[in-house]
Length: 171
Ligand SMILES: CC(C)(COP(=O)(O)OP(=O)(O)OC[C@H]1O[C@@H](n2cnc3c(N)ncnc32)[C@H](O)[C@@H]1OP(=O)(O)O)[C@@H](O)C(=O)NCCC(=O)NCCS
Image (cartoon, rainbow, N blue to C red; front, side, top):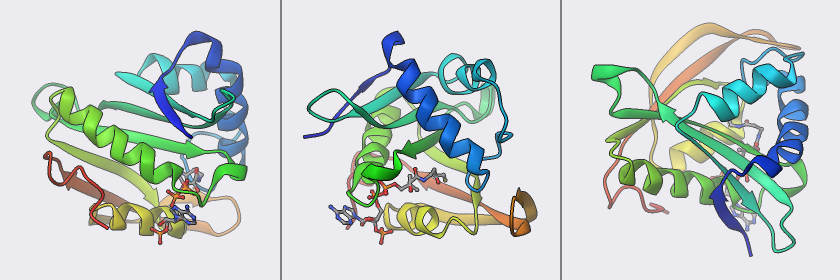
């Protein structure tokens, strides 16, 4: 069984290994592929409002996500999340579970909507998954992402208004 819980300090080495490998590929997130551990700790742990991990029964970390306001002040009721699943655990519903969990957490924290700012258009699995979970593509940013092998590719802005009904799995 998978458990999703808040990040604890002892989780960091496992999360860092997962994030370092994911960002090193340079095809899904804008973080520089050679980002330092301190930079990613700040981005994933210090700066978000909350960070969560998904673990298996043995406590091994299979995935992680962050939750934070997308804008300060008057835009602060819209949150932003980032999700990463370990390659060996992909295709088993983990990102689905984390995204549903994040929507429930966001509602509990008082957010009214969730926005993804830079979903790389070539990350087709992610685009399809977020659409299936009720996120709409509200904008397409031409060439906004510098892909390591495909050059300048489009990025999508995706948005979902949250309420207790829509935060459930629509499938
Ligand atoms: C994108 C990413 C988060 C998806 O994670 P995942 O855990 O593989 O996603 P899920 O398993 O929940 O969903 C993937 C697909 O598998 C399907 N699935 C869900 N449970 C399943 C199961 N038990 N068996 C087989 N397939 C299943 C889902 O329905 C989904 O299909 P869909 O794309 O048609 O909707 C993951 O590939 C990843 O971490 N990539 C690198 C970082 C990244 O791209 N993050 C997102 C940036 S926007």
